[in-house]
Length: 313
Image (tube, rainbow, N blue to C red; front, side):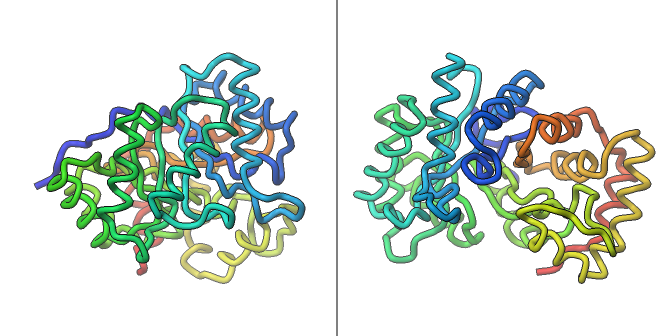
């Protein structure tokens, strides 16, 4: 039997991905992007302590620091929901209770806030008993440092076991999941999505535009200048992804909107989805992403899009 969703977060029409801050978007442009997002009706911002440690010269935490400086400069902490994650930063690896405690304090300092609206385990940690890390997360909620807890990249079985432990031990449960999901990455639909539905956990999908492939820019023979061009370009070798493009084009034309807006609307209208996560490097990109909130796909359009790329494990 499907459980009612447990989250009290609002999310808004779209969650702004913060992985670009300190990578392809510097501080000043980041401030403009964040302003445009909030001014356009956005409410929820997603980041992680590891963003973007992959950039030469970075050590991680740069995204949180930019967001934190923006929050203070605008004085708008109560207008937005802030989510970040623990596990993946080299200096703060894993989900041991001691690391969770140290990592959350680091993130709060960089974000220049006294609480997180949502704190994710960025990955599961098989080296730490679930009872231990769930108790550590629960302590943060009880102390008021964190409002809700999320699980990113967890298997269905581990989400179920975490829910059972939380219920048995009287601990705060995971209320949000974050996983790779888009029209061309649908592997979570067979097992994980029904599990989320049964547990009353909502999904905030990442890579919702498949590294930019679902922006509509990537076509056979097109040369796109982007830091994500290699990741997005791989879908051009997938016949299913190529077959999806004309379907997206037709639906976008019918709504007078962009391919990206249609792809995001498809995700937003899945019953377990709270809001898709998408990042924009510029104000113009953010405004285009927010346009997805004005797109309401019909049942026929949803079925047409879903039928173009049936799930593959």
